[in-house]
Image (tube, rainbow, N blue to C red; front, top):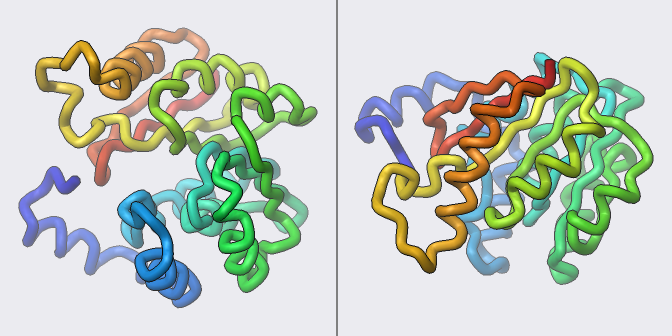
Length: 213
């Protein structure tokens, strides 16, 4: 979703860093072979994720929702040389696709895939994180926050995707629309939880940056 006029949005994109060739290849193959390719972060948001990661220079990253690995590779660009990124997804059919592109990148050995429910996997990860990216099933966003907040280092950052949810956050909510209700609850949590300070950015479908105090 674009919140700027198309011409202005085009200007913003054209004056931001270009998408790396490997990610262009990943995008093409995702659109050719994978259902719902719109779930890709895309070149502009990908460069935003890369820049945030490079500014933080994390030792450890946790990603919830791998899809075909586009955002994973963007986030990995900011990893310290001995750092690691753990990425969780429930779709078994995408594991080999992800690994192919991970291993084509300079970060293959640093990227650790976890298959299954993030609700089950997060408690098994015996480590803390400097950066967390949440881009998974919306009804569990609040649950994910509560699972990761104690695993987030002081000064660590949570990036949350789709927090404007196609603009539905400012529209009357259908009682059966569980995803929109969940996003609204999550946005309220991030605003009010005293453990984090939060800014919501109108980038694509909405990105929230929350820093642990």
